[in-house]
Length: 310
Ligand code: ZN
Image (cartoon, protein in one colour):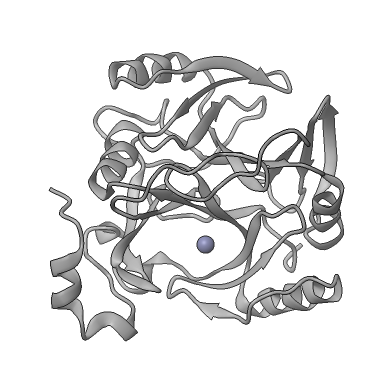
């Protein structure tokens, strides 16, 4: 079990205005800002990490808010929908809460499970789903959103693809997922290596125009492994399948590899170590602006150019 892919680690998406993004995810959806840092390759841009209290992998949604970037197009070759697991019976709360915050919602179901879908302020597609089995993950609460309603973390992510087969091969042969269900054009793949954030849906649609990455779209999805030793085992596996993959990259809170799967979606594999408490204590997570070593010397300049959050 130890050396397997443990479901999702995080998902990274693109936003426009930083403050609007921060306010929506912390105040409307009630997630914890687990880390406030900058894009390591573009330190004048924030990198926000939203998750549960401890920033457990499988709960982490991160954003690069690029001020002034135009809207992207959700379409094939992208992770098009993020599914959060919510407590049983909480969808009624969320319907009212989102409507109160001027978010329009649609009700539906996927594979017999009730859900609501809506867009964040940049147009990112979110789905809140009541899983048929209880999700025991610990949540982060705020005044408005208590235990019985708070988001548990990811349930699934949906990839929209012109042709599913080559991607399915990566999911099953390299990453250890198995087909659990299929209904029309939707396939569901699950890994039994972990109980939560373990589901990838694929919608095969060869008429869907290609997506374009900008605000309101997902940039990549990251799969989770225990440590950087296992990470490097996966690097070998991906290369043996004939795909190009980056060297190991130090992201301060985890180690990463990136590769583009044949359907066009950017995949990352990321480690549990060292985690978000490596540079600030649990109770202070997200309250300090954390900079990577290579940019610490430029802190004053960076603070000056970063967009205002209050
Ligand atoms: Zn990432």
